[in-house]
Every structure is written in structure tokens, then in C-alpha cells.
Length: 276
Image (cartoon, rainbow, N blue to C red):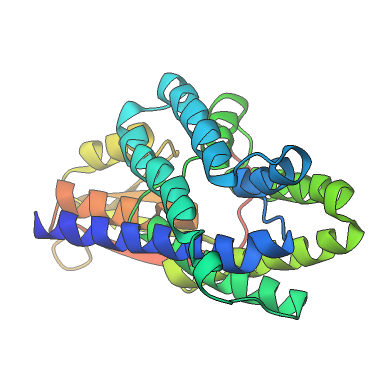
């Protein structure tokens, strides 16, 4: 129970930090960071549509879509962030009316926004939660079209930044792409501290249960290798799986829950090719 409260507290803190970054460093300077947040800036500029309300409406629509197309268990955590993020954007927006937090240098604002925004999202991902929004779209594309999750995310964010360039000017595109790159790096640093995918070699007395968890819960393939203990000579099953960095803690926690005596080795995989 304490562990759940701690995890939820960290998620709430992460969402709050991201919301502050959006209102202080990103939105006022029209730095389109991709995702629904970036689209909300565009709509606010074109139609004076409240950003927090726009994000809430789109998040709810995508949540319903995700509930139909994705696992309901996964969508529960998405719902929490989908509600908190626009709510915190609305509440923290009042800071701008009470405090002068403006920055003369737009590039500096983008860099600071990227660091703070990425740090907040990193806390959310680290606790195994999903930010909703375009993450849901990416997961659906991955599930039904087998598109690479990370590559699809980068492409979608870049396209949104490109659209922002037509609305706010070409200079905005440069700032936006720099910001997207930095905040993506920041997420990596917070979640794992390293770039790339993670490969697991797992030795467990419950290989079938771990295999089922990887395939059905994380939606990743797994290879089972035959091994033998050098000291005892006992035959062992070794599960090998490569996962995106954002699923690292989900798999780690899943293994411990299934078999707390399981032995596993994790290494960084900087390039993964072939397979599905």
C-alpha cells in the first residue's frame, strides 16, 4: 500500500512539473513540443481555444479510443494522467498572472522548458504510468500496424512541430526541434540514465508465467533458450527479451512479482534490427 502511494505521489509530482514547464517556458514562447500539448498551442493561436480544455477534450477522446483498442488494465494508469495534466495546466496558468516569470531569450526558455518538461515526464514514465494523448495513438499504431514505437513518436512530434512552423514561423520549428530533442534526452536520463533499448536475460523457475507476462502484458516477443547450471548441472530455461526503455521498470517489477528469486541480467542495446 505504501509503495502504491509513493508511486502515485511521484506521478502527481511529475505531472505538476510538466504542467509548470508548459505554462512557464513553452506555451508563452510558442515552442511546439509535439503531442497534444503542441497541438493545443496551435489551436489556441488560431481559434483562441483554451489550451487546458483542448487537452482535456482530446485526452478523453483518445482515452475512449484506447479503451476500445488497447488493454483496459493499461488504460487505468493513463486515465489518471489524462485528468491531472490538463487540470494542472489550468491551475498553474494563474501563476503567470501573479508572478513575472518571463524570459527575454527564447532559446533559453526552450532549453529550460525541455529540461523541466522532460524531467516531469521522466518521473511519470519511471513509475510505469502512461501520459495518454499521442502515446495512445502510437501504441495503437504499434499494435495494429507493427510500427516501431520510438520511431513513430519522433515522427509524430516532428510533424506537429512542422505544422507549428506554418502557424508561428520557421524560427519556431528550429526552437521546437531543439526542445523535442533535449526533453527526449531528459526523459531517458530520468528513467534509465542511458539511451537505447534494454535486453533482459532471465533465469526463473516460472518461465511460462514470465513469458505470458511479457507477451500479454507488455506485448513483446521473447525467446526461450536452454541452459545448464555449471555447478549443479541442472537444466534451466533462459528467457531473452529486448524491450523499449520505457518498459524497463514494468518488466523488472513484473519479474519480481512472479518470481522474487529469479536471476536476471540487464544490458543496454543501442541498436535492434530484424524481427517483428
